[in-house]
Length: 318
Image (cartoon, rainbow, N blue to C red):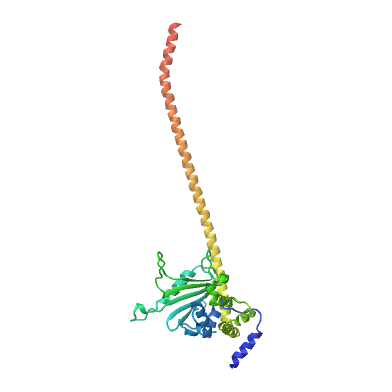
């Protein structure tokens, strides 16, 4: 028996309270998957509905764990090669920046562009992007685990099985389907979001891969340098969240001001229309008045000779 593993397990058994950083922290997420290939295989197997024991998984873009990182250039996605062939991108993103669809598509296309010089296009390796987000991609239709592929919009024929996007909504675990639960994807989501060691230890008893994940999280949580990078990422994400909320607030104010201006313009346009209508009415009334004056003048012209004739007759009689 490995003494260090025994010590780790014994220490974990005594762990209690809040976890310093869970796996929704993108650095801890990457660190656990990079440090423990068994955990990586277990997660990939669940997501792709494959037996982890049959998988050969390798991270293609590893980092030096604990080494200081630049938040702006930190590689967020974990590039995994599955069975020496499939390119799988895993990414943890809990903050909604409003650009996830475009971001994931960009990562997917980058992964799919894997043809080496001299190779045939038929040799392109499959590319998959799976993102873990803590918000609903489509607010009017939340879904726990959704997969998107290119298809014919008329007959729904799939264009290719060599590339697709999947999204795990960590805020919609209760919407997990029977198939999701069969492959324990909902349990992985709960593990990522767990906030206490008590929660994690309970989950560790249900699955060997999750047990391995919990042990690795405990080991990494005791690593001062890893914890420091997790802290930096957490602070950076809080700042980014604040910036996103501020931008959203400013955008809302600008949108409201634009709506006010649009309404004012519409009101001015209505007033101009009303004034134009009134001008038309006045013009019509003036035209009618002019016509009446003309008619009165005509009547007067006809009436004057008759009036003079009557006066002349009265003078003769007298």
